[in-house]
Image (tube, rainbow, N blue to C red; front, side, top):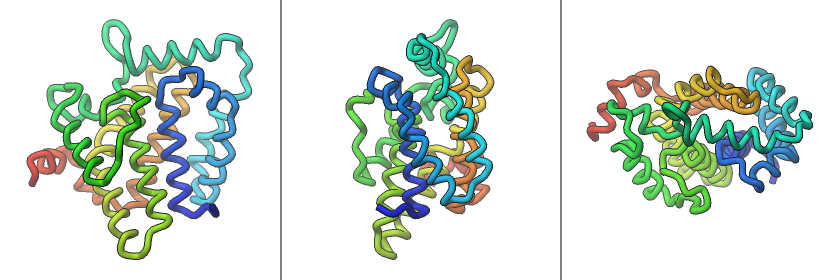
Length: 229
């Protein structure tokens, strides 16, 4: 399929989503083989985003490293950052931790994310086995919507664009940049530092691309959405 802007955005979302899954043997194999880099370059070239292309360079450098323990190091760092560390997880990858006043995992916002998925006909990947507001799920969902948009007729395309704008403004933009800042500041891995930097910049790109109103990103707007206002 010829790449257009919607497909380019879908490629970026899907690649980032996979990068935020646990680097088991299959995922690490996919990462280390590096075949995902070329489609990512092609997507960024089409979007004409030089800043994002610059942030891709450290990930390419990571692929060139040939350390024996790289797989184990990645798994340990993923666990430390996102799953389990003492005295607390460094960068929880769940929206509710950042969106709920109490910082709860699986709060009201998690239920709202799940409802949003169901209304859009999206089913969670069973093999990921994680909560609905895990960053990998949310990015994958946006990737699916962008791919559908590329094939949709005029009216359906408008509907899909509006769906993406609503999801980004309510469930991604209010927390993912802060999450990325945590990873950028705390990670011992150049891969996850670069990944989070690329993710943050892409989320800002998407806010502008989809035309998310500035006021919809405010805490007051989030509270209004959560109350159904």
